[in-house]
Image 1 (cartoon, helix red, strand yellow):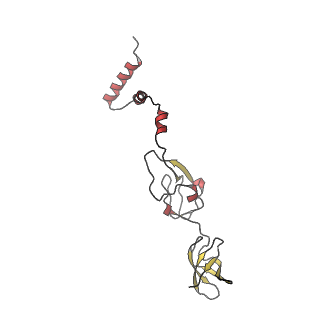
Image 2 (cartoon, rainbow, N blue to C red):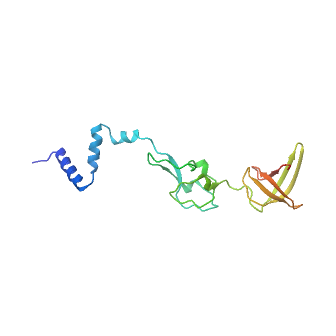
Image 3 (cartoon, rainbow, N blue to C red):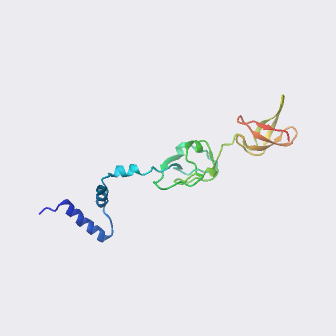
Length: 176
C-alpha cells in the first residue's frame, strides 16, 4: 500500500521533532502555507550594506590597491560600525597606517593620504605677499600630504619654517 506524500511528511516531521531537529522540507512547507516562495520572501527583506575588506594582509606603509580588497554584503539586519571605509574612493591609493587583516573592517583612522613630500626631501619653498614672491630651497623635517602643515629647514640660512604642502609638492609659507 503506497504511503501518501503528506503522510510521509507528517511521519518524517514527527521523527525529526523527536530527534530534535527540523528538516528542510518542513521549512518549505511552512513557506508554502503562506503562499510565498522563498525568492519572494528574500526579496522582501532589506538588502545588507556593502563594505570593502582586505582579501590579504596589508602592512603599514603599504599603498592600498583595489586588487587587495573585496566587496562583501553584510547579512540583513547587521550594521557596520561607524567610521569604517566602505567605498573604493576612500581607500584606493591611500596608505595603511597599521596592519589590515583579511576579512576585517577597515577603520577610516587606519588609512592616510600618500605623502607628497617625504622627510629629508629637498623642496621649493615660496612666500607670496601681494606682488612679492620669494623662493628658496629647503629640506623637509617631516613628511606631509597636500594641505598638511610641515616644518622645513632653509638650506641657506638654516632657519626652520612652517608651511603648507601644496598639490604640486612645493611648500608655501606665510608671514608669522
